[in-house]
Length: 391
Image (tube, rainbow, N blue to C red; front, side, top):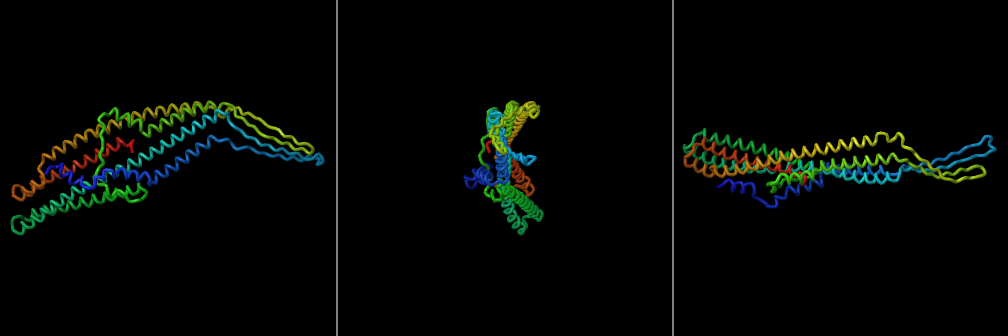
């Protein structure tokens, strides 16, 4: 039996719809995750806070009451209602600034979303790998149990010795121990996934990887990945906010105005009128333009640095995935050329192999299959990082 047939029977058996399990799990976590729900509320809070920056100040109402001395001259009173406001262009720029900040907060939320979903997908891929390791160990267990039954019969007829049966029993013990360890690790991963899903159980059905498309052209792939990177897009929005703050700071040098209504009340007469005032910003906005320009320059450098780091990371991931893909193909060819377990069992039964020789050969096959599973998991993990911008 060829290795690719074994792999198909062991790891691809089951429901073909399982290929979509990881995607459905991610959508469930996106809906139920508490951190994402908190992030949604934080984003809303930031937007509301930004909206308050473009409102008029509160109106000012004052009333004065004066008593004359001597009392015969009577009493007077004055009611004043006034409202201050910035130069009209300031409100236009503040409204544009609010739109830019809203986009920025949305992008910051996307960064958190991507981190949560990438973490969830990493756990999902580990669960698939652990399931496949369990299936491989189950195959080993069944094989060794058959050998144990065979050699117990041989021992009773004198065709085997106690050392050979002890070797088989030791192998059984080692396999069962590994299976218990993997089951414990799998349960821990399921608990992690359940926590990410708002404490709702999920992930038990994960048995197989979803198909992945590896990009053939790095330049095309990297351009797409950089363009969709939420961290870079967030920094670009920060730069837009910083530049808009420069424009706003310039308009804040325009005078502020105040207009109001006044009513004076004297013993014999009453007067109605209006008040008008102007505030010259000589001190309040000092250095604000310089500060805004400095922040804009800093953000620009951050964008350039982040873009370079992202390109470097993508290149490393791409090269790692390429090498892993080649290694997987080489392992496939190697395993197809190795002796299969059925041939080894037949050789052992016919006396062509000793027990020690059998276990050496069989362990090489199992070790190669285990290495293949590890390579496949590493490949899936790296490709998921490469395509994290699509989560």
